[in-house]
Image (cartoon, rainbow, N blue to C red; front, side):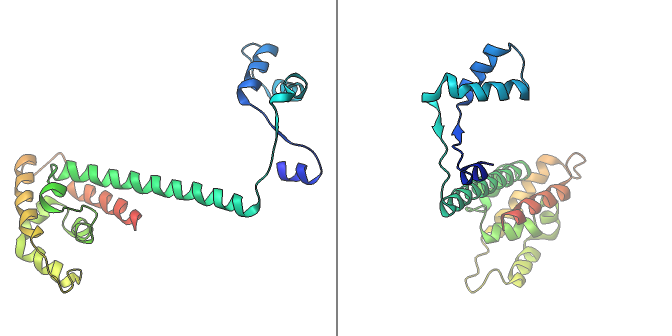
Length: 189
């Protein structure tokens, strides 16, 4: 609307929402309607002209930059939210040991692979260290420098988790929590 009006030679003003609210209250106590707002906005020019500022539209490249900054801010917010949710699930499922005892970087490629394949502590306990190590080596993620020191720590932690939740655990669906975590993790990619 502002672009069209400015192109037609009309001066467009920015209004202070607090002033509009005060003037609206003056005209009609406890009422808000488009009719009252239109009346208030029309009289604002007469009542407080010195406080109105002409709207200056930014050039297209500046507007594009503003939109890109807002989008970047949104992406950063979403990544932070997803990361916090994943860390929270790690804390609940693995009793705080996922980041402290097993993975120094809980968002590393190895930790992400482990979440996708061996996030359920009951599965980790059932398959054991040798099968996890073989699956990890077969994944190709290990590359030339094979560091599997995290595997015994994971199996040991899984034993502790199963000890806390009981075997079987009738109150927590670890497969559902793994699926939820994978979904959040994949959203980060």
